[in-house]
Length: 216
Ligand code: URA
Image 1 (cartoon, rainbow, N blue to C red):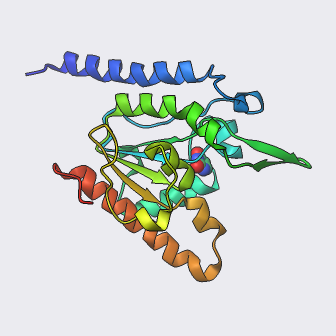
Image 2: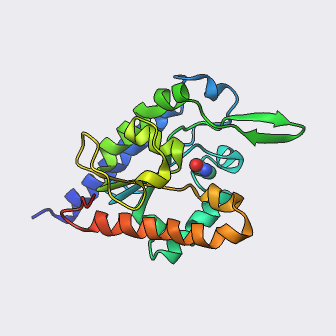
């Protein structure tokens, strides 16, 4: 049986692996996005997290803070996680693209969607995060994340609501909407979109906690 000191050693070496990856990614020049971004925003969360959540790319606030999902979309994501009964500290949260892509409009930095080659260039880091974290389920928030995770474009409404078994690794995938889509929605649609996102997160967490997790 492992004694306390070997448990501590195991934890710190796992942390070092993610820390090492983050340090390597900090110098990534695989696409041009590093040129205008403040820094690489690597994923955050524990090694061994049952669920790994992938967003699109850091926003303006995340670019400055160096942490994923800490701006307006992140705050909404936290609220929806709470609604779904999920503790964010149990999750590893990252992005398909790890630099903020933007154009200037006056003094504002306006978010630009990453293109296919930027998504592909950044995929090495998501792969490395999956290798180290070893989640049971990956949640892709929105079309960019889904494209990166699955390796091909999907129509979200056609694939959501089930656990996909498409990857070459032992992990299920749940595709759902991005919290930013809820933020942008009309008043009439917002409540239902929020509820449906919470439902998808609940489904993913239930699958992550079940031994035979694949259901779709
Ligand atoms: N949107 C994302 O997809 N990721 C973040 O980190 C913040 C906003």
